[in-house]
Image (tube, rainbow, N blue to C red; front, side, top):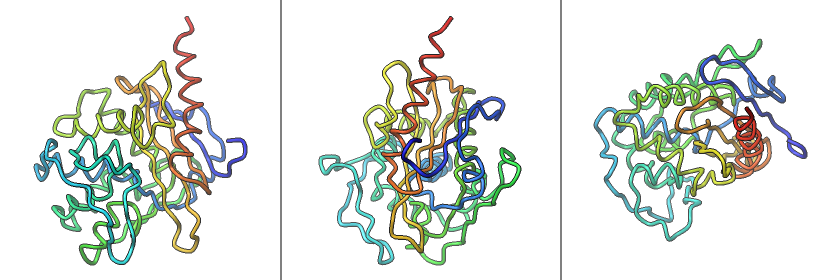
Length: 265
């Protein structure tokens, strides 16, 4: 974290034991817009309720304006048609905005609350509870699903939500949502979270970039777990100034060190 303001927390997936942390109080108290780190939970809800076929391919449409907010995708323009796996790997705003309209506001709120994003985690002595507003129209529904409006979470809240995904992966309980778990691995292997890639271990994770309501500067998030096949650790990186890819690069040092530890007899 040298040169960065923010927080990083590493937990053991099976026990929630904190293995390492910097600025745990910041991770537990600061409420931030989660950006694209929400996408896996939205797509999971759609897949598991049968509202989305994982193999259905949709065109990425640019420019993308939602409720007066410009939401063009950050992935390269040569990625033009995506399925559910691709949408997570390349963090396609267009795909997620389109399929989110298959949910009503209650279904979206339910999915985010079941992930625990508006609840304290118990990982720190003093925590804030996340806030999720009920969307008033379709535009607000889409912006909430993209983590850009109507929702604020703590970095610890995101870490706990991804730790639960890691537990599902360990148990082989991915079912209809398998494309999301594949997408999280592919995001690190070649997608928008590639900054967290390490040679000796598969990592799964997602980046997020968003701006606060009263601050045009963006903050960056990375949340993920490793080894991807049988997760042992989960990591969140929060940078008060920066972008998701910057946070992924910080996380890479943690995963690289863990990969080296796994090699030791």
